[in-house]
Length: 542
Image (tube, rainbow, N blue to C red; front, side, top):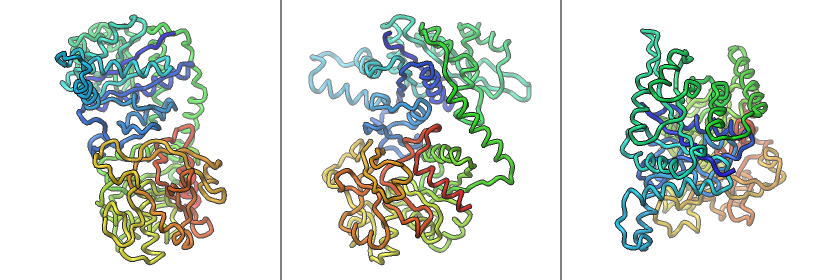
């Protein structure tokens, strides 16, 4: 069987759940025994999200091979449990950069470089490249909404893919809004009709419509949409808002989405083995129902960061907490706290109600002192604590300041001339001036000490986690810090880079911090060990 291609577009408004639809379909097709690869096309001119503020598009998700990507790739990985790559995230900026570089090299032999065919050909290359990795089915989501000028080259490219391949090898899914007007007790199909008309004007006829709705779609509305949008009624799929994100694949399975995709693509394996996913959801529902009872134990977790105005800035952290909470059969109530508001004077009042504290990653000196005061409070008051990337670095700085009593302690990132740079720039980063895509990115191995809490949590000596940083623990201070009680629990294989620090369980119930981002590898059915340990400790603290 040759590679099949599924294209997911969206219309009417943004935020309809194209990413969740694409991720859910990936899971359902994988449960039918097919190897699936998900991909996202983003129409912005940035080469990647790496230099963007999290307030623009939420968190920057990092793949094993070091791509800085849109947060939808996190959904893809969590749903399909497939590691994605640089070819899974493509932006307008990346396409134009590559085409201009080719033009400068003379690859086009003096031809006039145009959107069609040169830009569209470059886009198609990314689609086909993913198909050449051994995937049976490539699912490509087109960011933005149909009608946006920015998306037109991507839409034209996927139209051409449909012409270049057999009809049974390509399918177009269109996600639209089906609004419910409570005053008249009606679902309105007109926005969907207009969206499909816009897509057809570009030359793409959608094969399946996935309608985001708050209520079930009556047959009368389903038939009306089918008639006016030129699809079969069974290809009008309801995507109702779910109480739990991970229920969506099963809801779409019940609606027949994957079956209709299989029929169109002439796939032989149409019966799904959703048993494990169903069991996982039943487990989640059981816990959710139990904890609707106000008398049931709940743990309160604080995420103390600087980007809290947009919760998607810490999306993978939040999902990791949820995964770990289900594993510990406890409900976690998450509260975001602006690190800029935490001071030495108010730290107790702000943080005393929490059973666990997370200080996540970030860049820049805004809110740094608040993070340090948060860590100090967690350490001194024996509150379970997890530090991530910058959170780990600030844990080191706080310990050096308060326990070692060193003066003028900071990270070189914030105070280049400080007397005691406990965190300094990596040797490989010293002559790097371009900010985009130049950090230590992607998956790297880490060796754990067998007498450490980290080893106890992971259950193995060598682990692999994903990184995104320029600065590191200054090895000149390792001996002093360990003698004072901040244990180095994990290092790079050659011992040169400190990856994990922790306090002994005899002195603190749970205090651990990693230079990496553990949240990127957490899965609903395989929660990340550090988060599992944090929630377990928070449960005990409660």
